[in-house]
Length: 94
Image (cartoon, rainbow, N blue to C red):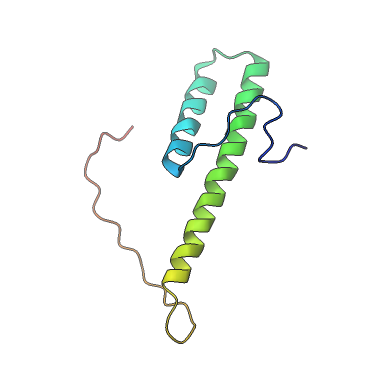
């Protein structure tokens, strides 16, 4: 089985940031849902999507670790605070 970082099948490297990774995933989903890809093309797009999903999850896990590290209390325990997301305005949600 190919490793996540392997580029031997001509796949593009993972984007440099999380937002670009999500954007590429959205594009792949649109292509897959359009029905215009051949079976081979669909499999290739699916494989690329799996790699991008794993990369995005890894980035989220790393971000969570950084946040936990930054919120560690003085006594060494984690001082977890609930995150209150700002009220989302209608920003052209898809």
